[in-house]
Image (cartoon, rainbow, N blue to C red; front, side, top):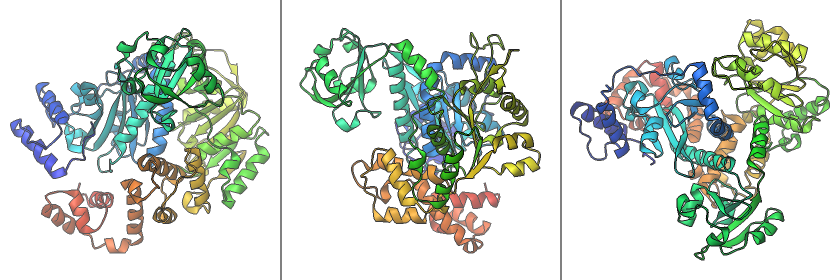
Length: 632
């Protein structure tokens, strides 16, 4: 369930009463949180004790990741998409197995201390019996979506976190894992759980279609515009038109469980003939009306399917190329003269075997620009392999990049595994956040670039590789070279051409960018209120184009068929505007003394929201000032 944002004073009072007397007053916390607190006490857990840390060894993690390879392969693209939507917040996205062990994580963990950061890396466990009340572990126990914020966590060590987790379920309602977003408890959580729900549903649909054999799949919904979205029903039939599998959305729409429908014929479920739908669907994937056996009208489209082995082989090879590129160099040229100049430079060298280094702030569109370069090159039909050098899990970096042979270490996959560098052969290798690559790996990478060959771990044989090289950074690499943090020889190997993408606040093409983003989201005719447009022009956009895209994507989801208005903008986005105004008026904040904050906190019994309103600043600004004054 969606927990309402807890009132801080009410929550703290309920927590104190429970820890002292084992009683929770009605409305103090949700029933799910209360049940979890009681389980923690029954397990002998004390709120102030150190968090129990259980982390898998490298070999144990590899074995677990191998066991859940299908889940990982289907979840990663959706995690990347979700990360793009919330990248301007301090958040970590986590995927776990059914026992609560983290299989994969990504995002910004700078708001955590070292111990908390370790707790969110692959291999860590968030079982409720180990970590107390938390979104992942409690969602697994309750088998429902959970948000656990601040002091709702049973263990005090976790009060810095606000977490939203959703179980990922199979068509037969078995828990496959969880998807979680963990963020700074001081950040607004207005829409986080809704976004996690949508991403988890997309993962479920991807898992469903990747897990079942069948001759064709039927995609249906009561509203035609929902076909192709995460809400569509999906039914898979064999060549004899017998039902093989039905996803959870389809079960809900047809009002029957998977078991009730198993082995049903198409003609027993629907009034139409599948051959008729197939003919219509062959013509530009046409969506046609479809009546159920109970005479309820739906809309549907049929897609022919390849055998499972062929699809899995395609998914395996496509995993290197991620998802379809949503832009070209021409599409990215939306009217800013600096961007137009960069594009013209790139077009001159794109097929000249010249490495390109893309500089720009976080969110300025470096990866999208790199992907557009790949699409414009002669290698566009080859693989696209993107490596985030800042997100490679420690201990697995070499195996990820260079691959390994069978028996290279305990738990290694049978027959070994090719690394990212080998996967890029014949296509393009994109090294994102190259400035964060460890020095030891820089030396190995330089050797690969010089010799055009790669040696997997546990092997003595080199394999030739041939790829175009693109890299990106939000840092000043030349300064890192001078400080000894980045190899000079590698730097000159990477920057055959260096281009800089301007920050969004420096660009002159905001209306064109908005129009392009709406087009990529299939909302080209979407109306936007004038006050929203005015706010967009004045906003500082600290998250750059990524933030603009995410704001529009979320607003589209919240607005439905109505024009995008101020009520469809998230609070953290509005806070950015408020914080920028406060920064401009910084001298007026100098009178905000520690004594004034203490007095306001006392007057409002520690309610941070009420204190911020009294002082005329945002919660985020208040937290920053309190930290600067050592009041928290």
